[in-house]
Length: 109
Image (cartoon, rainbow, N blue to C red; front, side):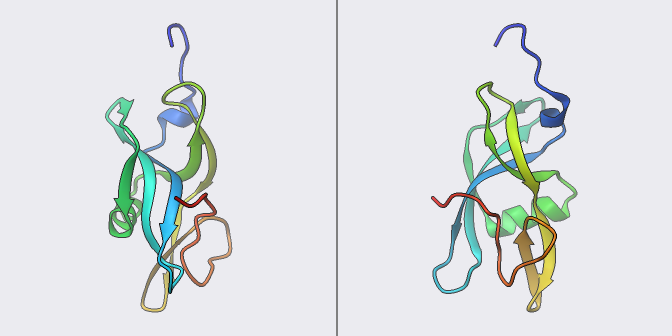
């Protein structure tokens, strides 16, 4: 939109997760829908596997949950995604207390 500047908070993000899909048996993330920053612009909505998401979080990228705002490139941020040790692996969660499985507190797709 001409004459509109994206807030600095949205410029500092790398990945914004907007929806999640979990496995039926164990509450483990299978895929997530996310917007990924590509240089100065945001790419289209893509699917990220659990392994790709873990690599992005361990690679020091700023991964958050949120939803797109009315202006392209601007997002309403809910929480930061974190990793926690879980049964010999890692769990992906948001918030302070790590759950027993993955929990991003997002709508399902």
